[in-house]
Image (cartoon, rainbow, N blue to C red; front, top):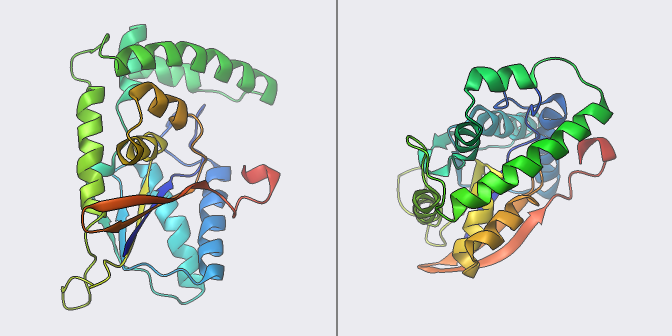
Length: 241
């Protein structure tokens, strides 16, 4: 039986100039995940990373823990199919604003109270647009549609649920263990594929995927089963949740 572990990236810089950048908390979440995996003696035969900076930074935090423990971790393979959906670009189009406008909205230091208020305002607007997009009622040009995203996730799962190879390039007979660093939307849609969820259920699920959480898919040939979802035993400190 092969094992595919999907990892959501650490906390991103939601109110920073570049969302695609781990916050200091996100960086520590990644390191905490790495330490936990090392403590558990987890080994992986293949490492896959999505194309975003936050994916690579999360993988790097885990890799640092393996290096500190002098444990091997295969070189990461970039697989574009494990990218997040295009909801942020969709939302900007929905609001009629550019990325520069978004930078201005995010810039500057804000307190915790203002941050929470802005997040509530953002997600209230975002959720309405998100569900229109998912239902195919809003399809801005140049933005990947939800249907295309869902098909891409199915392709990504196929890529993840194939046998890792040994040092000589031979497929491992048991399929091996693969870890993937990606985003919450892709993790949620992966469950949608596995469990036959409706699109609206996938949306609801995506809001609950925790930073650096672990979701495991067990597979044998074309058969795939969910082994674990949204586990975050390494986030024991309230500052890391």
